[in-house]
Image 1 (cartoon, rainbow, N blue to C red):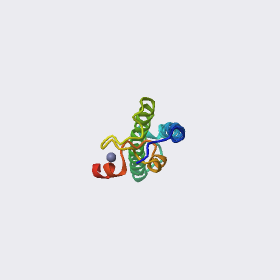
Image 2 (cartoon, protein in one colour; image 1 turned 45 degrees about the horizontal axis):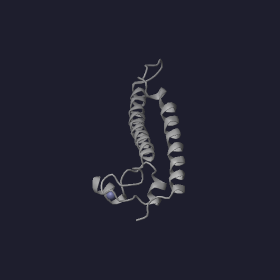
Image 3 (cartoon, helix red, strand yellow; image 1 turned 180 degrees about the vertical axis):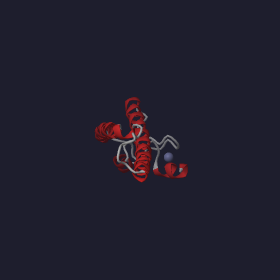
Image 4 (spheres, protein in one colour; image 1 turned 90 degrees about the vertical axis):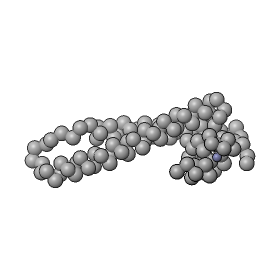
Length: 116
Ligand SMILES: [Zn+2]
């Protein structure tokens, strides 16, 4: 398996920075919706339950988003210290095509699917 070229590393660095920005944006957009649901006038019991239900989905999505953001930040750190692009499990280089799709991936596809 090929190790990353410096050109590929800089492409992935840009992709990680872009991803980080998008995730931060997404978290700030959904921030208001994650606050406790207020009781409103003229609102039936059913719509309040709907609202609580929608909110629980939103909070679950925010958790996924913030975990992804942590993975992106860890990937950026690995990029600084040169551990980036290697599987954290088998230590083989992770194929560029996989990193292109998931720049925050810390494992190769084989180890990732063993892990799940
Ligand atoms: Zn692996």
